[in-house]
Amino acid sequence: MQFRSPTSGLLSVEQMIRQIAAFLEEDPKAPHTIVIGTDSHTTSQSTTFVTAVVIHRVGKGARFYFRKLRHKPMFDLRHRIYKETELSLALVDVLNAKGMSALLSAWPLEIHIDIGQQGDTKALITEIKGWVTSVGYVARIKPESFGASAVADRFTS
Image (cartoon, rainbow, N blue to C red; front, side, top):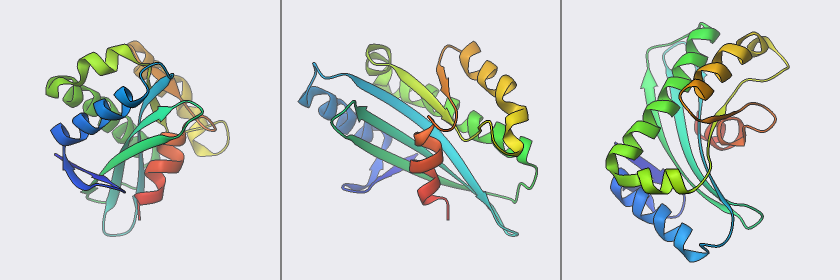
């Protein structure tokens, strides 16, 4: 599994975790939030999923990393939103397995979901937020879900 960083290029999961740890150590007293969010874009040929990992030093900037996955076209919105959420939650498991569990337990972790009160996704809010919170994470939706709706969205095309 590999991630991209706008400043460091292509990184392994282990390299990304080391960079995240170093960023957190630069200012350990500052409040930080770890954000994971996924967005997707569908064309007639494929659906591209982008999962972003954002380390937000509250009030002082952030670093982010992302990975892209291509999938056969998924035109059903409900199915696509469930897949986005699944990819975000699966990444938390990968990060924990690769040694990031201490960081994830030390700082607030939010799962950002690209759904909101406007549009077709509002019918999914209760069930998707319920899924994320039932496994122990904070779920954020639009307009608070910048990890999915701004960072990941930027790289879906």
